[in-house]
Image (tube, rainbow, N blue to C red):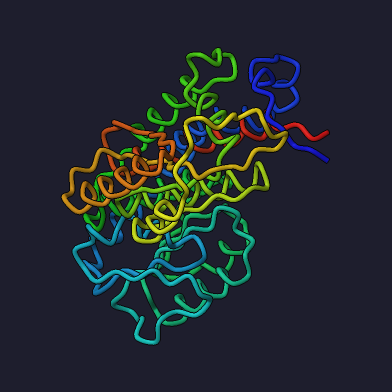
Length: 343
C-alpha cells in the first residue's frame, strides 16, 4: 500500500464535506471560550469574593492531569510558590493555607476526583473548573471549595475560565477571554476550508508537512507546550513521525541531516525519503535566550538546506498567542490528514 498526498483534495468541496465535523469543531474554538467564560462569570465573582475573605494562599497547587497548561502560564508569574501536581495524591505538605486549582474538562476522571476529595479533607482552598453534576464536582463539595461550571469539555476553554479567576485574585497574568476568543476566530477565518489553497496558511503548511518529518520548536514555555500539542496533532492525523523539543534536542537531528543535493530529482522515486523540516512557532518573544536558540536552529537548518516554516501570532496576551499557535498547527495537521491518500 502506498500513501501519497493529493493537494487538490484541500479545495475539493466533497472531500472537505466529509471532514466537516472536525473542521467545524476547530472553527468553533473561539465560541467555546466565550460560552464557558460567560457561563462561569457569576461563579468566578463568588470565588473572587471568597478568596479576598481568606487572604492570599501560602502556595498554589495545580492538581490533576491537565495541570501542565496552568504550569506553563503561571510559573513565570505567580507571586507565591507554585507547583503542578499531575498525579493522583497531593504533596504531603498541602494544607489549609494552600490553594488547589483543578481543571477537569470532562469531569469523569476518577484520579482527579480522588485528588479533589483529598484536598477537601485536608481543608485546602479548592477551585475546580468542571461540569456541574460530574464525578469531580460531586467530590468537590466543601466549605472552602468553589466550582466554576463548564460544559464544552474543551481543555483550553476550561483553562481560560480558571486563568480568569487567577487573574482576578492576582495570582496569574492577564487572561482576557475575549482576547483568546478573538485570536481563535482570526485563525479560523484565515484557515477556513472555504479559503483557497493559495491564500490559506494552514493548507500551505499542510503541503510542506506532507513530504517531511517535522521538527516543531517553540522558544518560550508556552510556545514549547504549543509545539508539543502541534506535533501530537500531526502524528494523530498522519501516523507519521513528528518531534517537538528544545533547541538542544532538535539541533543534533538537524546537524545529522545530509545536505540536500540541488541536482536530486524529487520525482525519481515513487516514495522519496522524507527529510526533516523545522517548524518554528513564534509567539513574538524578544527574550535573548529565545533569540539565541532560534538563531542556532535556523543556522543549522540553512547549512543542511532543511526547509523552515514559521507560524506566528501577534495576539495581545500570552494565552491568546498560545491558543492561536495551537489552533493554526491543528488546522494544518487536519488538512494534512485530508490530503493523504492510500492506494
